[in-house]
Amino acid sequence: LGRFELPVPGAHNAANAAAATALALEAGASADAARAALARFAGVARRLQFRGEAAGVTFVDDYAHLPTEVAAAIAAGRAGGWRRVVAVFQPHRYSRVSALWRDFADAFLDADVVVLTDVYAAGEAPRPGVTGKLLVDAVLDAHPRAVVAYLPHRADLVGYMAARARPGDVWLTLGAGDLTSVPDEVLPVLRDRVASSPLTEPAAVPAAVPADEAGRGS
Image (cartoon, rainbow, N blue to C red; front, side):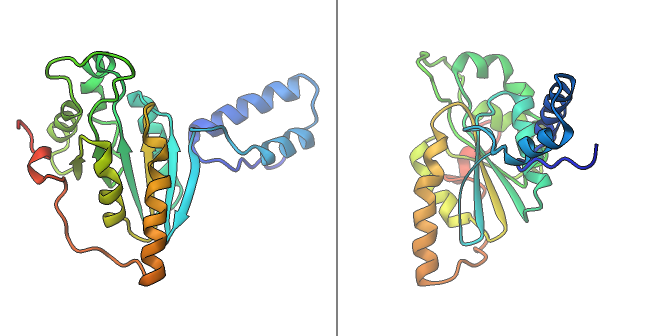
């Protein structure tokens, strides 16, 4: 059949493409037609969607909100050959976090840096003790050396991301909430900075802002 190429990253996308190709061939499509169709596929919104690039920093958005989906999206980022993979995740719904927070312990293994926010309510009422901090604790309990930042408020993300972005990074905004537009706010900051001076390696910075919010047990 020859070589088939898919212009979107991720082993899960490759598996989906293989299944779609098999069905197309079974239905009577030619291999050349299937190959051409895959080559034109640009993906779907909020599934490893390219959001922009500035100063050598790439931003990709994904709707991933379950542990396995988060792990798959980060693995796709790791396979892309970027220097660092930074995962910015917004937990979705208090009910889901209450049930699944422990399952996120290993979801971020392929990320060099993890940034976690508070829960996106999606219409649910808050639950006592159910916050994004549960995920911070789960990750750090399982992987004490992980680099994890806890920024509960979405408003703090733009400054944090712009200050810590490095050339060669890919920043993944993940979740079913409202992080998808964050790259649109960060990109102009990076472009303005590059216009005045090249983006360089930042000095060592704390893993969280404020620093004590990422500590376990607080």
